Structure formats: C-alpha cells, structure tokens
Image (cartoon, rainbow over all chains, first blue to last red; front, side, top):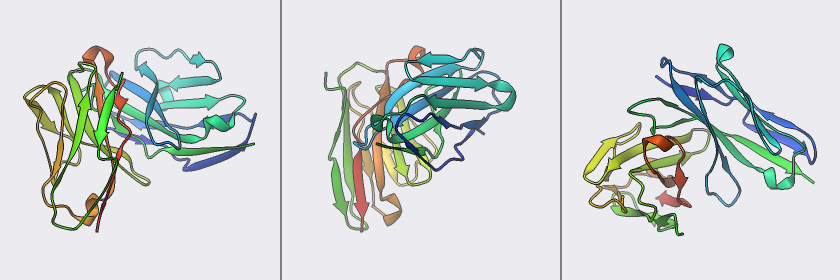
Length: 116
Length: 114
C-alpha cells in the first residue's frame, strides 16, 4: 500500500523567510513518481513538479527547490524568500510507475501562511 | 482554453437525494478522475477512467457512480446522498500515461448534505 505523510499541518512565516515542507512516503514499488501540488486560497489545484524514483537529482525552479532522498523516503519542498502569494495548501503525492501511474495518493497537505 | 470545467460549484442536498456533478474537458485527455477533498485527509480517489467506455473504482467509490460515454465528459453521480458525502469534489484529467500524474484539475464543487 502507498502512503504519503505530511507531518506539518500548518506553517506560518514572515515574508522573505525560507520555508521547507516535509514529505515522507511509503511504497513497495521499486519505481514510482512523486509530485507536489499547490492549492491557493482560490481553491484550484496546480501541478508543480513530478519526479521519477530513479532520478534523485535535486531540482530548482525559481524560488522553489525540491530535495529527493530515496534513502529516507523523503521528497521535501523548499520555498526560498517566501512571498505572500506563496500562501496556499501544498500537497505531496505518490503514484506507482506502470499501469497505475495516473492514480495518485495524496498526503493530507500543509497549509503555508506567509505574512507581510 | 476552458481546461476542466465542473458544474455546479456549490450544491446543498438533503439526505437521500441524488444528483450529478458534471465534468468536461476540452483537451482531448484520455484519463479523467474524481477526487474528494476532506480536511486533514488530502485528496482521495473516487473513480477514474482511462478512456471512453472504461471506468474503474478508486479508493473511496461507495455511494458514487460514474460513466464515460465520450472522451470529454465524466459525470459523477451520487445515488442517495449522505452527510458523509459532504466534501469538495475535484475532477481531474491528464493527457496519457506519458504525462502520468500531471493532472489538470477543475475548480472544485462544494457539496453539503444536510
């Protein structure tokens, strides 16, 4: 069975602070995908990143960066120099590669509040 | 591009009533799915479809029916609404297996069952 744990329920920071969101996953599959989605206050869900299990390179996209560590089953997400527009609920998700790779298991989400 | 369109955005039902949440996508995506979002539980997969005429159950299918008669549409039917089905429902689609997990979501439908 697959499981995604986001232990941080809520994080509050002041603008320009860095914030790291933790994601720990469990799977028996040897190949899988990991994802992060953002849900701003308007409610829609926005895809941020997909990472294959065989690619452990860290990734940076602007102020966003992701740290994938297979050894600790973690896929953490850092927002550098946070801005008010980063306030949202962030979901980590997992799917097995192969025939069911489109079936995502989501974590409970972490609510990030960035104060001006 | 309209993307994924869900209707209605808000609905209040009484216990035992039935209703259909509509979902349509104009991106010619093969894969469509329905999730429900509940506080502290993230999103849970209800039903999904990998193409017209093909549907299957997700993690929490009880009390819901789906059909996929066309590529564009994937309605979710609540047969006899229960208060436990109070939730926000999201329809999502993706192009194909090569874009696995890169889901495009609708804006959500907030359902309250009294």
